[in-house]
Length: 193
Image (cartoon, rainbow, N blue to C red):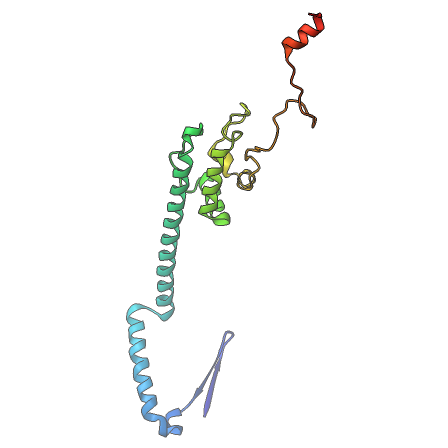
């Protein structure tokens, strides 16, 4: 005999006197029932299975979050240390980055996109750039917030501000080399001496 109980979420089918029809499996079934009973008793003492599962999931998530936060804090501190090594190059130091601040979220986004190594590599590029150090343009002053702006960061990382040693320094806008004049010789020729 089969009983059927249905509601809007599920249907339960029960075979009445199942053990009677399965007499050869009766000892195995009794063992399973006793194991199930012990397991159910354990669940009842600690709450439902769903609650227990959710609790374990929350513990794993907390452990992951704690680990992830400590990794990020370590990376942020490494970047602060690398940045502060730029002080001899005329770059202002930073002392801390407040969690949850715009500066912190921008830096974390850079870390997630490029990784700690690339961010530190970009910081090191400042040491080789006269422009970023403010030596070529007095109107420009590099600061950390400018540096972690995603558009600026990519330019620094890709080398847009690297020194070009192969360029000839000229004050005019053409491709001709400047002539070098001996002014004394030119003056004497002009005056007829």
